[in-house]
Length: 35
Image: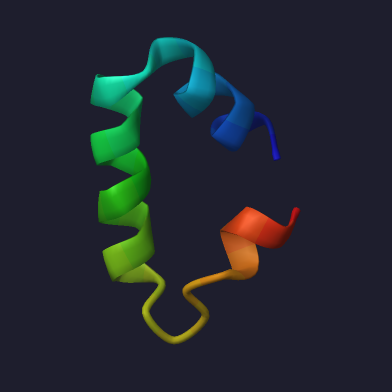
């Protein structure tokens, strides 16, 4: 998923965004990591 690659590039700030996304997707916490 492009957002995950972007997060790796941008580092800490995007890491926070991914954490927020994870909290919003608690029903499927791994779905955005698998793609």
